[in-house]
Length: 421
Ligand code: NAD
Ligand code: ADE
Image (cartoon, rainbow, N blue to C red; front, side, top):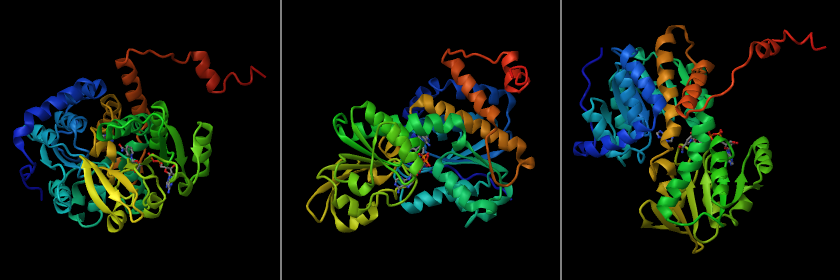
């Protein structure tokens, strides 16, 4: 049986004003999500529902939480990475009536406990970024499964974990990451810009003229390579997928194995969703002063754990650790190898997350309303929702597009095919 919610557990409630200013700035630049907010406020689609959200807890995410709250839900929020939570934003959320279990840089125990506490609420709906809530619900927290109608997943790594669960998945999860208005913009342009925002503000070094090695040429990697190139870098791509590798060649980048790239790179950015893509053996072959950053979901892409066992470490600037290797060379690791754009920055640009979080809000409404008819598996976000977000985004940008004429519709439908023979 569901009990009253336990009270929030955050670092410092007195930071609420600063957090609220950040949320106001974000929401002022999120017209699509604001529009959904106004609709939800009228129609209250989540009336009486408890919604548990595990996302990078910064201003844009906070606004998503408030939009779902405006839709009538009791919202419970926790972070999806120990370094991406912003304490002032948490304070503002609590002041606005959201229950928050999150703080910046918690211990591992505190981090895990915060996810348990979100599930102690016995939510009806969930939003996950990376699959931590779903993983708990299918292992140690099956007690909380009974209420869950469904949820939505934000990122590629979370989708991989959902696919790994396969038929064991106990409720429908909407694949927000796989919507076109998500990965074409968030993974590509969002990661591309925010990774360099974080690297630049952390290191204060120039990118132009340097060699940037992009590890993985998926949607995020394409964006990182594009922006590195735009900043004047020489770009090398490493891949394991032959098709992505040709794509990178055709896009104009050098492609080679990591074992060759190590000696050439000045800056390395991992975006694979895989583990150990940069090992200590690779690091031993790098130039003195090479900079290593990860933008993949988990902090296992660069093998920092093994690095700690062979190298001495000194923090040389906030979020920059200098590791002296056994061969005397130094490599710099940013943000402990955690996703750099959120651990050392504010995440993706606001206008990009306007689309992503509009999809999240509408995905949650969809799974809530359709859950009884949906299979207990990964569910695609309906194309109509994707298009609705795109059309609204265009209208907020003051951009009109053409529509098919009746003749064109008929031609597509094949009616004119015979007449043209
Ligand atoms: P994707 O599947 O489109 O691309 C990953 C690419 O990495 C693939 O092309 C794959 O072949 C390649 N790869 C796998 N192992 C490799 C290896 N050993 N060496 C070289 N390449 C390898 O995934 P994506 O959408 O680009 O996401 C990548 C990661 O970034 C995921 O963990 C995702 O969750 C995360 N992500 C982070 C942010 C962020 O804000 N930092 C945003 C979106 C996604
Ligand atoms: N801000 C909040 N969530 C984010 C995400 N998943 N990626 C980038 N920036 C974000």
